[in-house]
Length: 106
Image 1 (cartoon, rainbow, N blue to C red):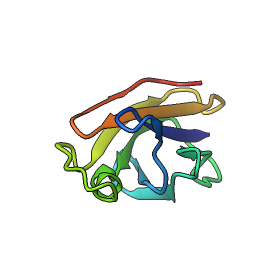
Image 2 (cartoon, helix red, strand yellow):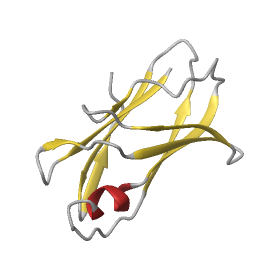
Image 3 (cartoon, helix red, strand yellow):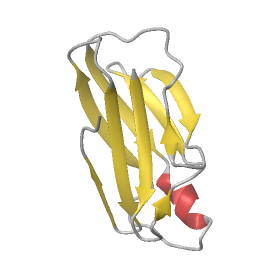
Image 4 (cartoon, helix red, strand yellow):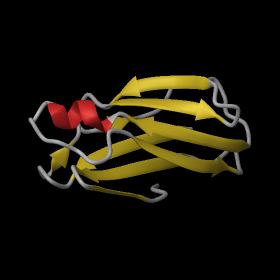
């Protein structure tokens, strides 16, 4: 399973209604969702995943525009590897208008 969570460190709250797209190694869109009221996407409704390379694209400009905030990063792209299909891959994102960070969550 692949999931994500976005926290807005500038406003100190979860980032809601942010579009996140999931792509496979060939750049094929395989999933899309929006963050919920807690800033989370529990999964991308995939029947199964395979070992390999993936990327998540977070559309942050639309989120910050709602608060009349300019952002230096209109979208964030995170590339990651799935090595064991039996594991849960949680990719959190911490954002502010001029910075972001990520890590492998649990």
